[in-house]
Image (cartoon, rainbow, N blue to C red; front, side):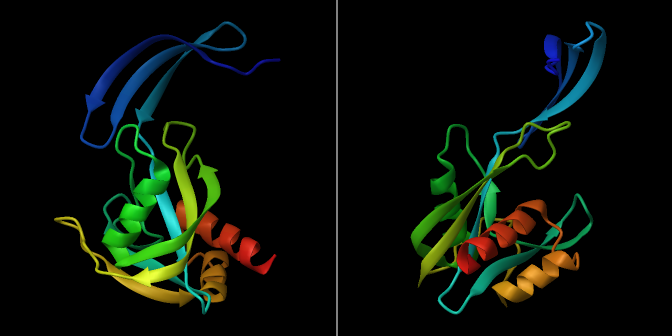
Length: 178
């Protein structure tokens, strides 16, 4: 059986600066119809920066969606048709003040595929080069350095809950430790 849902009609119900919400009518595999609300988003990219001593750079910032401070890897929203690797390089420099000598692709994730089109591309930065932090206007965050093994434990104990950060820590640890 094919599980594809064919879109019959689509109506935009909200258009914001960061995402759009649409209401689709779809035909299900059994030929019945259903309604789907979908958030469309250009996607994002995140980068886990690992130094020579196995420390990673995280940013602590307030996230309105969960009404709390969250520990995350540096990340940002992709501009339309932007290369995810370039986005990561920009965000790493802006948020932490570091550039990467080497960038490794760790894959992509669908953070909430049931109702959102967002894809987040994950990279790992090594051979770090200290430069100057250049935060965007209205961006408030603190950069913290954490041992990779401690971050791994923080993931397992739910002290790091951000999906892209969880994936990045797990993949980076596996790649580095073998």
